[in-house]
Length: 337
Image (cartoon, rainbow, N blue to C red; front, side, top):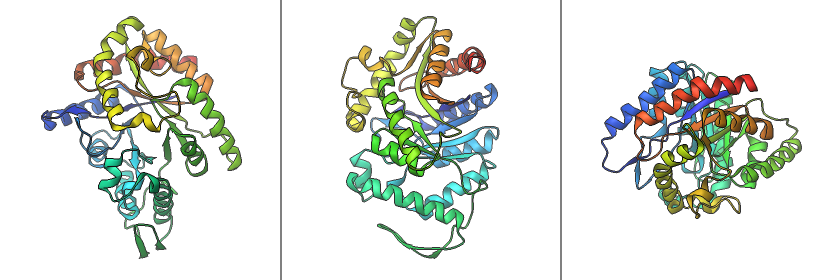
């Protein structure tokens, strides 16, 4: 079992982002010191009401300062980008991290982002596949000539190649069944999102397994899942402490339309008790250990990414969560697994 820490960096507008960046880097420093395997950073644009530093420069700084950690782009919204630019940027990250970069990919769901980058939700799926295919060709071939929907490569080359061959592992973030089938067909693994309820994920596991079989593949060697987590002496106390920040976060996600692209029954338009049911990891260290072991048994996952720093939460709380997880939960999970 491996374990990572997601740094979303969702801070209120008006905060001094120099201070917040130092806090994000302190989280990465603590993760390395506590023996976590990786740091993950997502990416959104026009993310009102939050501020967040961007993914690629942040991961580059983490790679330079904390070389023991794998760095995971979790995820890059491929339909928003040109493949040659990404191929060179991400190959550079793989070099900077000495071959410890993970290429997480996603389609996205926000019209404000699609419009800003000159595309639409309807075009997102085909552009996603086209972009990923082109990046892999640029990493593998000396020169690439091809006509894309929004680019043209004429004997173009990727001026830097990644250390990992044929390229960094590709984790597919996906909520919908069509995305999960795409993950089986094109990805190295499905990166299970933190928002779906366990009952939905169990159903989608069958979708994933069938799609893997249709592509002539077995279960991935590395199979990650992300979950929101908060530990306290009791589940009731964990919920009480986490509730103010998580309510702010999921109110923003509703406004962004996140749950409109979730499977039926997984929407966020419900009271907090219903929102957290069958979705997040809350409780004492022993309870959270059992919940993680249950995920491993039910789904076969072997890489858990923790999200435990949400809008309005003091850094000290999230660092304390990381320490409890590292000292009391992770050893117990590995022993139980």
